[in-house]
Image (cartoon, rainbow, N blue to C red; front, side, top):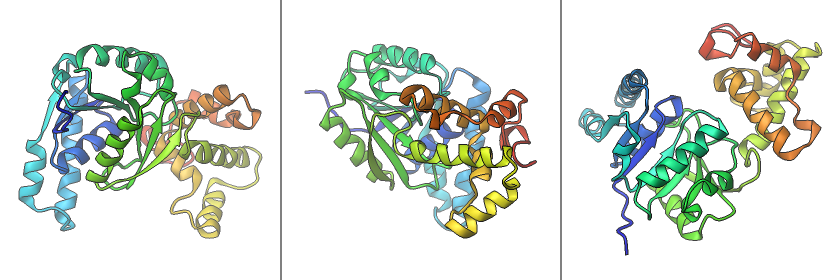
Length: 285
């Protein structure tokens, strides 16, 4: 029987989500191997994590020694082969099917057979990712919310072949991280984006059709529906390209015209107006 104790966690992809996930595991006492093919991304991730932990110290949620210990548990690597000794893995690369299935096949070859391979995908089929491996029973979705260090929800997605044991291990792991796990079935968009993205899309249609300005629409949703931020501000925060990618997955996967991405969203993405990260979306940053 293989030792299934989880001490060392691999995180692949050092973007916004990947570094947040790495930080949360390191803060919770796990050794973390953060892996990205781009060295500059790893440097940026470490700087971001240092800043984030620094804010926790300022707010009195962490002590300075705890911050230093957390950083000490985080190591960065640029080769997939360096993940051979991890006890659990979270993939957080770009939301592209081919890139993810290719990576899962490679991770399957590199990691030990009992290791669970999880994906932080926000909409891509877990069943599809599992099928790229020889261990589909040990492949599941672990969809963290952005910003990961602050948001407590983790959507756990059970693929067609995911075993109850794998789901139980992931559930326990979420609780160790201080997160609240909620299980979703493997349908396009899971729960969160199945409901959120049509709302964002409808808000964009409302802008396109002149129903209201972005400010008016966001104010109605904040003050009228008690949302902490309006759907267009949220879309800018997520990235309009990411919103478009998820809507395409919903539209193709469910075949229902109600998920058709708004033409204005397509036009903004084509123009490079991606929201906060590009400096311009529905608002200017």
